[in-house]
Image (cartoon, rainbow, N blue to C red; front, side, top):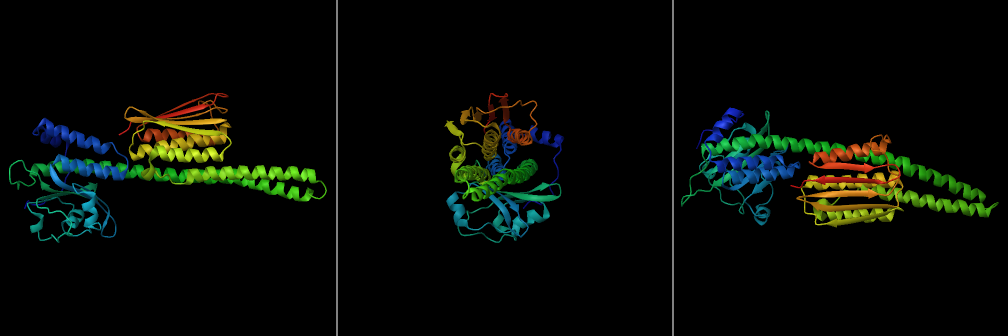
Length: 399
Protein backbone atom coordinates (compact mmCIF):
# COMPACT_ATOMS: atom_id res chain seq x y z
CA UNK A 1 0.00 0.00 0.00
CA UNK A 2 1.32 3.43 -0.88
CA UNK A 3 2.00 5.84 1.97
CA UNK A 4 -0.73 8.55 1.98
CA UNK A 5 0.50 12.05 1.17
CA UNK A 6 -1.27 15.29 1.86
CA UNK A 7 -2.59 16.96 -1.30
CA UNK A 8 -0.76 20.11 -2.25
CA UNK A 9 -1.26 22.68 -4.99
CA UNK A 10 0.42 21.78 -8.28
CA UNK A 11 2.37 24.75 -9.66
CA UNK A 12 2.32 25.77 -13.31
CA UNK A 13 5.93 24.58 -13.68
CA UNK A 14 5.17 21.20 -12.13
CA UNK A 15 2.09 20.78 -14.28
CA UNK A 16 4.14 21.55 -17.40
CA UNK A 17 6.87 19.11 -16.34
CA UNK A 18 4.30 16.43 -15.63
CA UNK A 19 2.46 16.87 -18.92
CA UNK A 20 5.71 16.97 -20.92
CA UNK A 21 6.24 13.28 -20.10
CA UNK A 22 2.75 12.27 -21.22
CA UNK A 23 1.92 11.31 -24.81
CA UNK A 24 0.01 13.82 -26.92
CA UNK A 25 -3.12 11.66 -26.64
CA UNK A 26 -2.90 11.96 -22.83
CA UNK A 27 -2.50 15.73 -23.05
CA UNK A 28 -5.55 15.94 -25.29
CA UNK A 29 -7.52 13.80 -22.83
CA UNK A 30 -6.59 16.08 -19.91
CA UNK A 31 -7.50 19.17 -21.93
CA UNK A 32 -10.83 17.65 -22.91
CA UNK A 33 -11.62 16.75 -19.29
CA UNK A 34 -10.82 20.24 -17.98
CA UNK A 35 -12.84 21.95 -20.73
CA UNK A 36 -15.80 19.66 -20.06
CA UNK A 37 -15.81 20.57 -16.37
CA UNK A 38 -15.74 24.31 -17.08
CA UNK A 39 -18.63 24.09 -19.56
CA UNK A 40 -21.42 23.38 -17.04
CA UNK A 41 -23.10 25.62 -14.50
CA UNK A 42 -25.48 23.25 -12.70
CA UNK A 43 -23.91 21.48 -9.70
CA UNK A 44 -25.33 18.09 -10.69
CA UNK A 45 -24.02 18.45 -14.25
CA UNK A 46 -20.57 19.42 -12.93
CA UNK A 47 -20.44 16.40 -10.60
CA UNK A 48 -21.39 13.98 -13.39
CA UNK A 49 -18.81 15.50 -15.73
CA UNK A 50 -16.04 15.26 -13.12
CA UNK A 51 -16.78 11.59 -12.44
CA UNK A 52 -17.01 10.62 -16.11
CA UNK A 53 -13.83 12.58 -16.94
CA UNK A 54 -11.85 10.98 -14.11
CA UNK A 55 -12.96 7.46 -15.04
CA UNK A 56 -12.10 7.93 -18.71
CA UNK A 57 -8.83 9.76 -18.07
CA UNK A 58 -7.43 7.09 -15.72
CA UNK A 59 -9.04 4.16 -17.56
CA UNK A 60 -10.91 2.87 -14.50
CA UNK A 61 -13.88 0.54 -14.45
CA UNK A 62 -15.73 2.50 -11.74
CA UNK A 63 -15.73 6.10 -10.50
CA UNK A 64 -17.73 7.99 -7.88
CA UNK A 65 -17.85 11.43 -6.29
CA UNK A 66 -19.40 12.17 -2.92
CA UNK A 67 -20.36 15.58 -1.54
CA UNK A 68 -20.66 15.37 2.27
CA UNK A 69 -23.54 16.76 4.29
CA UNK A 70 -23.40 17.93 7.90
CA UNK A 71 -24.96 14.77 9.35
CA UNK A 72 -22.44 12.03 8.64
CA UNK A 73 -23.80 11.17 5.19
CA UNK A 74 -23.60 12.48 1.65
CA UNK A 75 -25.73 15.28 0.25
CA UNK A 76 -24.92 14.01 -3.26
CA UNK A 77 -23.22 10.87 -4.52
CA UNK A 78 -22.63 10.44 -8.27
CA UNK A 79 -21.34 7.23 -9.88
CA UNK A 80 -20.08 6.25 -13.32
CA UNK A 81 -19.66 2.68 -14.59
CA UNK A 82 -22.65 1.35 -12.63
CA UNK A 83 -25.97 0.85 -14.42
CA UNK A 84 -29.12 2.58 -13.15
CA UNK A 85 -30.64 -0.78 -12.30
CA UNK A 86 -27.60 -1.85 -10.31
CA UNK A 87 -27.43 1.52 -8.55
CA UNK A 88 -31.05 1.21 -7.44
CA UNK A 89 -30.38 -2.31 -6.15
CA UNK A 90 -27.42 -1.10 -4.06
CA UNK A 91 -29.80 0.90 -1.89
CA UNK A 92 -29.35 4.10 0.18
CA UNK A 93 -26.38 6.43 -0.21
CA UNK A 94 -23.31 5.39 1.79
CA UNK A 95 -22.44 6.94 5.13
CA UNK A 96 -19.14 8.63 5.92
CA UNK A 97 -17.23 5.66 7.28
CA UNK A 98 -14.14 3.61 6.55
CA UNK A 99 -11.96 4.88 3.71
CA UNK A 100 -14.61 7.41 2.62
CA UNK A 101 -14.41 9.07 6.02
CA UNK A 102 -10.59 8.95 6.01
CA UNK A 103 -10.39 11.03 2.84
CA UNK A 104 -13.02 13.52 3.99
CA UNK A 105 -11.63 14.05 7.48
CA UNK A 106 -7.86 13.74 6.91
CA UNK A 107 -7.76 15.29 3.42
CA UNK A 108 -5.22 12.75 2.23
CA UNK A 109 -5.14 10.63 -0.93
CA UNK A 110 -5.52 6.84 -0.72
CA UNK A 111 -3.98 4.44 -3.23
CA UNK A 112 -4.59 0.78 -2.41
CA UNK A 113 -3.68 -2.44 -4.20
CA UNK A 114 -6.83 -4.11 -2.82
CA UNK A 115 -9.38 -2.06 -0.90
CA UNK A 116 -10.90 -5.24 0.58
CA UNK A 117 -7.70 -5.97 2.52
CA UNK A 118 -7.52 -2.56 4.16
CA UNK A 119 -8.37 -2.73 7.91
CA UNK A 120 -10.80 0.16 7.51
CA UNK A 121 -12.86 -1.70 4.88
CA UNK A 122 -16.35 -2.44 6.24
CA UNK A 123 -17.88 -4.30 3.31
CA UNK A 124 -20.58 -3.20 0.90
CA UNK A 125 -24.17 -4.13 -0.03
CA UNK A 126 -24.90 -7.40 -1.86
CA UNK A 127 -25.62 -5.66 -5.19
CA UNK A 128 -22.40 -3.63 -5.03
CA UNK A 129 -19.86 -4.52 -7.76
CA UNK A 130 -16.60 -6.20 -6.74
CA UNK A 131 -13.71 -3.77 -6.48
CA UNK A 132 -10.03 -4.32 -5.80
CA UNK A 133 -7.44 -1.65 -6.62
CA UNK A 134 -8.55 1.76 -5.42
CA UNK A 135 -7.56 5.42 -5.77
CA UNK A 136 -9.26 8.23 -3.89
CA UNK A 137 -8.65 11.95 -3.46
CA UNK A 138 -10.44 14.69 -1.55
CA UNK A 139 -11.64 17.75 -3.46
CA UNK A 140 -10.73 20.86 -1.50
CA UNK A 141 -11.65 24.53 -1.64
CA UNK A 142 -8.84 26.04 0.41
CA UNK A 143 -8.85 24.15 3.72
CA UNK A 144 -12.43 22.92 3.29
CA UNK A 145 -13.07 19.45 1.88
CA UNK A 146 -16.08 19.81 -0.41
CA UNK A 147 -16.07 16.32 -1.89
CA UNK A 148 -14.15 13.11 -2.44
CA UNK A 149 -13.35 11.42 -5.75
CA UNK A 150 -12.97 7.64 -5.92
CA UNK A 151 -11.75 5.31 -8.68
CA UNK A 152 -11.64 1.51 -8.66
CA UNK A 153 -10.44 -1.36 -10.87
CA UNK A 154 -7.80 0.08 -13.16
CA UNK A 155 -8.11 -1.52 -16.60
CA UNK A 156 -4.87 -3.14 -17.71
CA UNK A 157 -3.73 -3.78 -21.27
CA UNK A 158 -1.99 -7.04 -20.41
CA UNK A 159 -3.95 -10.30 -19.81
CA UNK A 160 -4.89 -10.97 -16.22
CA UNK A 161 -4.89 -7.32 -15.20
CA UNK A 162 -3.80 -6.52 -11.68
CA UNK A 163 -1.61 -3.56 -12.57
CA UNK A 164 -3.38 -1.16 -10.20
CA UNK A 165 -3.17 2.62 -10.05
CA UNK A 166 0.23 4.26 -10.29
CA UNK A 167 1.85 7.30 -8.72
CA UNK A 168 1.41 9.03 -12.08
CA UNK A 169 -2.33 8.28 -11.90
CA UNK A 170 -2.41 9.86 -8.47
CA UNK A 171 -0.64 12.99 -9.71
CA UNK A 172 -3.04 13.25 -12.65
CA UNK A 173 -6.10 12.82 -10.44
CA UNK A 174 -4.69 15.49 -8.10
CA UNK A 175 -4.62 17.97 -11.00
CA UNK A 176 -8.14 16.98 -11.99
CA UNK A 177 -9.36 17.35 -8.38
CA UNK A 178 -8.01 20.91 -8.15
CA UNK A 179 -9.85 21.94 -11.31
CA UNK A 180 -12.91 20.05 -10.07
CA UNK A 181 -12.87 22.19 -6.91
CA UNK A 182 -12.92 25.36 -9.03
CA UNK A 183 -15.72 24.06 -11.27
CA UNK A 184 -17.81 22.87 -8.30
CA UNK A 185 -17.33 26.13 -6.39
CA UNK A 186 -18.32 28.17 -9.46
CA UNK A 187 -21.43 26.01 -9.96
CA UNK A 188 -22.45 26.52 -6.34
CA UNK A 189 -22.00 30.28 -6.67
CA UNK A 190 -24.09 30.25 -9.84
CA UNK A 191 -26.91 28.33 -8.16
CA UNK A 192 -26.81 30.69 -5.18
CA UNK A 193 -26.98 33.66 -7.54
CA UNK A 194 -29.93 32.06 -9.32
CA UNK A 195 -31.71 31.53 -6.01
CA UNK A 196 -31.28 35.22 -5.21
CA UNK A 197 -32.58 36.14 -8.67
CA UNK A 198 -35.66 33.97 -8.15
CA UNK A 199 -36.26 35.63 -4.77
CA UNK A 200 -36.01 39.04 -6.43
CA UNK A 201 -38.46 37.96 -9.14
CA UNK A 202 -40.96 36.76 -6.55
CA UNK A 203 -40.61 40.07 -4.73
CA UNK A 204 -41.26 41.89 -8.01
CA UNK A 205 -44.32 39.75 -8.70
CA UNK A 206 -45.66 40.38 -5.20
CA UNK A 207 -45.23 44.11 -5.73
CA UNK A 208 -47.00 43.97 -9.08
CA UNK A 209 -49.81 41.86 -7.65
CA UNK A 210 -50.30 44.50 -4.97
CA UNK A 211 -50.28 47.34 -7.49
CA UNK A 212 -52.38 45.72 -10.21
CA UNK A 213 -54.79 43.31 -8.53
CA UNK A 214 -55.32 45.37 -5.38
CA UNK A 215 -56.22 48.42 -7.43
CA UNK A 216 -58.64 46.37 -9.53
CA UNK A 217 -60.29 44.92 -6.43
CA UNK A 218 -60.55 48.35 -4.81
CA UNK A 219 -62.25 49.74 -7.94
CA UNK A 220 -64.47 46.67 -8.02
CA UNK A 221 -65.62 47.31 -4.47
CA UNK A 222 -66.40 50.99 -5.08
CA UNK A 223 -68.28 50.22 -8.30
CA UNK A 224 -70.34 47.52 -6.60
CA UNK A 225 -71.24 49.96 -3.80
CA UNK A 226 -72.28 52.57 -6.38
CA UNK A 227 -74.48 50.02 -8.15
CA UNK A 228 -76.15 49.06 -4.87
CA UNK A 229 -76.91 52.73 -4.13
CA UNK A 230 -78.42 53.29 -7.61
CA UNK A 231 -80.42 50.12 -7.99
CA UNK A 232 -83.66 51.67 -6.63
CA UNK A 233 -83.55 55.25 -7.89
CA UNK A 234 -81.75 54.81 -11.22
CA UNK A 235 -81.86 51.17 -12.46
CA UNK A 236 -80.32 52.08 -15.84
CA UNK A 237 -77.23 53.59 -14.24
CA UNK A 238 -77.06 50.68 -11.80
CA UNK A 239 -77.01 48.29 -14.74
CA UNK A 240 -74.08 50.20 -16.25
CA UNK A 241 -72.19 50.05 -12.97
CA UNK A 242 -72.77 46.27 -12.74
CA UNK A 243 -71.39 45.86 -16.24
CA UNK A 244 -68.29 47.72 -15.07
CA UNK A 245 -68.09 45.33 -12.10
CA UNK A 246 -68.00 42.39 -14.50
CA UNK A 247 -65.24 44.06 -16.55
CA UNK A 248 -63.09 44.81 -13.50
CA UNK A 249 -63.55 41.27 -12.17
CA UNK A 250 -62.40 39.82 -15.50
CA UNK A 251 -59.32 42.08 -15.52
CA UNK A 252 -58.44 41.07 -11.96
CA UNK A 253 -58.76 37.40 -12.92
CA UNK A 254 -56.43 37.99 -15.89
CA UNK A 255 -53.82 39.56 -13.61
CA UNK A 256 -54.02 36.64 -11.19
CA UNK A 257 -53.74 34.01 -13.92
CA UNK A 258 -50.70 35.74 -15.40
CA UNK A 259 -49.04 35.88 -11.97
CA UNK A 260 -49.74 32.19 -11.35
CA UNK A 261 -48.05 31.30 -14.66
CA UNK A 262 -44.89 33.16 -13.59
CA UNK A 263 -44.89 31.78 -10.04
CA UNK A 264 -45.55 28.15 -10.98
CA UNK A 265 -42.26 26.20 -11.16
CA UNK A 266 -41.60 25.07 -14.71
CA UNK A 267 -41.48 21.29 -15.24
CA UNK A 268 -38.41 21.48 -17.45
CA UNK A 269 -36.92 18.22 -16.19
CA UNK A 270 -40.08 16.26 -16.93
CA UNK A 271 -41.54 18.02 -19.97
CA UNK A 272 -38.64 19.76 -21.68
CA UNK A 273 -38.35 23.37 -22.78
CA UNK A 274 -40.58 23.25 -25.87
CA UNK A 275 -43.54 21.58 -24.12
CA UNK A 276 -43.19 23.83 -21.06
CA UNK A 277 -43.14 26.99 -23.18
CA UNK A 278 -46.09 25.83 -25.28
CA UNK A 279 -48.18 25.05 -22.19
CA UNK A 280 -47.45 28.38 -20.50
CA UNK A 281 -48.13 30.38 -23.67
CA UNK A 282 -51.48 28.60 -24.14
CA UNK A 283 -52.44 29.69 -20.63
CA UNK A 284 -51.34 33.27 -21.30
CA UNK A 285 -53.27 33.32 -24.57
CA UNK A 286 -56.44 32.46 -22.65
CA UNK A 287 -55.67 34.89 -19.82
CA UNK A 288 -55.11 38.03 -21.92
CA UNK A 289 -57.05 39.86 -24.59
CA UNK A 290 -53.99 39.90 -26.88
CA UNK A 291 -53.33 36.88 -29.09
CA UNK A 292 -50.26 34.94 -27.90
CA UNK A 293 -48.81 32.31 -30.25
CA UNK A 294 -45.93 29.83 -30.14
CA UNK A 295 -43.97 28.08 -32.87
CA UNK A 296 -41.01 25.70 -32.59
CA UNK A 297 -38.79 23.84 -35.03
CA UNK A 298 -35.93 21.35 -34.65
CA UNK A 299 -34.88 22.31 -31.12
CA UNK A 300 -32.57 19.81 -29.42
CA UNK A 301 -32.24 19.22 -25.68
CA UNK A 302 -29.93 21.85 -24.19
CA UNK A 303 -27.98 22.06 -20.91
CA UNK A 304 -30.33 22.61 -17.97
CA UNK A 305 -29.01 26.10 -17.23
CA UNK A 306 -29.60 27.25 -20.81
CA UNK A 307 -33.12 25.84 -20.93
CA UNK A 308 -34.06 27.62 -17.71
CA UNK A 309 -32.53 30.89 -18.93
CA UNK A 310 -34.48 30.68 -22.21
CA UNK A 311 -37.71 29.99 -20.32
CA UNK A 312 -37.19 32.90 -17.91
CA UNK A 313 -36.30 35.32 -20.70
CA UNK A 314 -39.41 34.26 -22.62
CA UNK A 315 -41.52 34.85 -19.51
CA UNK A 316 -39.97 38.27 -18.89
CA UNK A 317 -40.40 39.34 -22.52
CA UNK A 318 -44.04 38.22 -22.48
CA UNK A 319 -44.59 40.00 -19.18
CA UNK A 320 -43.19 43.26 -20.57
CA UNK A 321 -45.22 43.04 -23.77
CA UNK A 322 -48.55 42.15 -22.17
CA UNK A 323 -48.26 44.57 -19.24
CA UNK A 324 -46.71 47.62 -20.90
CA UNK A 325 -47.10 47.53 -24.69
CA UNK A 326 -50.87 46.94 -25.17
CA UNK A 327 -50.29 44.63 -28.16
CA UNK A 328 -52.82 42.86 -30.34
CA UNK A 329 -50.40 39.98 -31.05
CA UNK A 330 -47.35 38.52 -29.31
CA UNK A 331 -45.53 35.81 -31.28
CA UNK A 332 -42.98 33.51 -29.62
CA UNK A 333 -40.71 31.19 -31.60
CA UNK A 334 -37.94 28.78 -30.59
CA UNK A 335 -35.82 27.31 -33.37
CA UNK A 336 -32.59 25.39 -33.68
CA UNK A 337 -29.50 27.48 -34.44
CA UNK A 338 -26.42 25.30 -34.99
CA UNK A 339 -25.91 23.27 -31.82
CA UNK A 340 -27.94 25.79 -29.82
CA UNK A 341 -31.23 27.62 -30.12
CA UNK A 342 -32.73 31.01 -30.95
CA UNK A 343 -35.68 32.40 -28.97
CA UNK A 344 -37.68 35.28 -30.52
CA UNK A 345 -40.49 37.22 -28.84
CA UNK A 346 -42.17 39.81 -31.09
CA UNK A 347 -45.12 42.08 -30.29
CA UNK A 348 -47.00 44.70 -32.31
CA UNK A 349 -47.49 47.00 -29.32
CA UNK A 350 -46.47 50.55 -28.49
CA UNK A 351 -42.70 49.92 -28.58
CA UNK A 352 -40.05 52.10 -26.92
CA UNK A 353 -36.55 53.50 -27.43
CA UNK A 354 -34.13 50.98 -25.85
CA UNK A 355 -31.49 53.72 -25.43
CA UNK A 356 -33.63 56.02 -23.32
CA UNK A 357 -36.19 53.79 -21.61
CA UNK A 358 -36.57 54.66 -17.94
CA UNK A 359 -39.79 52.89 -17.00
CA UNK A 360 -38.68 50.96 -13.93
CA UNK A 361 -40.45 47.69 -14.66
CA UNK A 362 -39.30 47.40 -18.26
CA UNK A 363 -35.79 48.73 -17.55
CA UNK A 364 -35.19 46.16 -14.81
CA UNK A 365 -36.68 43.48 -17.03
CA UNK A 366 -34.15 44.21 -19.77
CA UNK A 367 -31.27 44.10 -17.29
CA UNK A 368 -32.50 40.76 -15.92
CA UNK A 369 -32.81 39.27 -19.43
CA UNK A 370 -29.32 40.41 -20.43
CA UNK A 371 -27.87 38.95 -17.23
CA UNK A 372 -29.61 35.61 -17.83
CA UNK A 373 -28.42 35.40 -21.41
CA UNK A 374 -24.84 36.31 -20.55
CA UNK A 375 -24.82 33.90 -17.61
CA UNK A 376 -25.22 30.89 -19.93
CA UNK A 377 -22.92 32.09 -22.70
CA UNK A 378 -25.75 33.53 -24.80
CA UNK A 379 -26.55 36.89 -26.39
CA UNK A 380 -29.62 39.11 -26.16
CA UNK A 381 -30.75 41.58 -28.84
CA UNK A 382 -33.55 44.10 -28.33
CA UNK A 383 -35.08 45.85 -31.35
CA UNK A 384 -37.82 48.42 -30.73
CA UNK A 385 -39.04 51.89 -31.60
CA UNK A 386 -42.01 53.96 -30.41
CA UNK A 387 -45.15 52.84 -32.22
CA UNK A 388 -43.39 49.95 -33.99
CA UNK A 389 -43.53 47.11 -31.50
CA UNK A 390 -40.64 45.17 -29.97
CA UNK A 391 -38.57 42.13 -30.91
CA UNK A 392 -36.38 40.37 -28.36
CA UNK A 393 -33.97 37.65 -29.50
CA UNK A 394 -31.89 35.39 -27.28
CA UNK A 395 -29.40 32.93 -28.78
CA UNK A 396 -27.50 30.24 -26.84
CA UNK A 397 -24.67 28.13 -28.25
CA UNK A 398 -25.80 24.76 -26.84
CA UNK A 399 -23.63 22.26 -24.98
